[in-house]
Length: 302
Image (cartoon, rainbow, N blue to C red; front, top):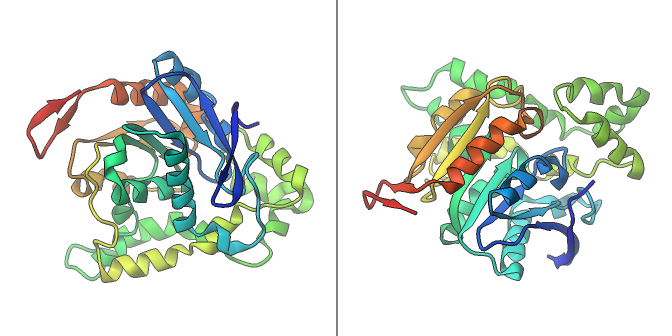
């Protein structure tokens, strides 16, 4: 169930954009796979009560936003353009940005492309993309080790698995038995299954098909700065029981942030905003409410 909001024509598609709260202080939250904007249902009330306006899009292929069948529409560059178009249409500025899972793969590059739009950033589970894919480059350097590369590969196998023919049928076969196994740690997998049953399709697989992560590993192996440092203050919340991402990509992130950077470890699985919402909310609100230490200017900023 998507959050209350409006339908906007974005990139030629009908986008559902949740818009909750009335404040000049804005938080934009971008969900990941296999969720829609409702995955932030515990964060939005807490943020509104703390004095923030929350902008929560259902990205293409999810929720009440259009669901094109053609894979090419799910290129991450196009989805990033859609997010910027939403920001422009709503006249947003000084945005506190939040991403999770694929939402982080969308929002990290947004910081790199237009840092002037953003006040602070919070990523759940996902560190700087140069750290996520950086093990490939490390293998060409003295500091690279097979163990660090395998740490990445053993948790990223599913992105290759999602690109294979027949995955949609496999997920839905035998009353979603494989889906239940794969998403065993998702706190609301029944709601996700019900959404799939309504349409009989799984458009969100197109994100992995359109954006094969092997290409990110290859690009980063050639040039570690293909994902440049960011200049926006960053907090990464890493749940210690995450099955899909590994801790060093979060721990290494401060080296890729030219501003204040916090790494917060909490209990919880990959969907920490759902299984440990209070822990996430306290840290997120504290981060957005706090002053920022500008490492370049050596001053505190409100």
